[in-house]
Image 1 (cartoon, one colour):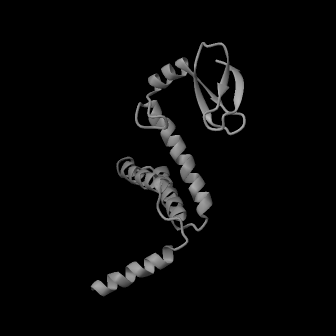
Image 2 (cartoon, rainbow, N blue to C red):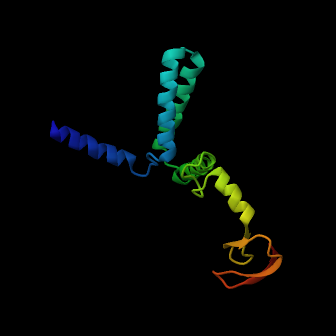
Length: 145
């Protein structure tokens, strides 16, 4: 019996070579699938069943896909949206600050991008016209804070 599972594990790993596999977005889809199935158990709506089937098919399509750059881009987009949503509720999202803290931060500081290297630079608001020196490439540029 042990030999059977070893062969099965080996064949599965050979099959999955070069495929995307599971990522955060796939885990989210599986959670959404469970929620849809449970809702459908209680509400008995055909649309919920069809939606559950669609999520299941799309989830397996993503897991078995060989187009890794495309699936990676989808996962990154999901993570960005997730960070924004969690940030609204004060959870550990993109900046780690709650919505209120983010608003206070934006009132106190202005963010500029260096014209040569793109480095983000935080400058206190209300300082007037100032020369900003990029800490990364040492380029100087003038902005109003």
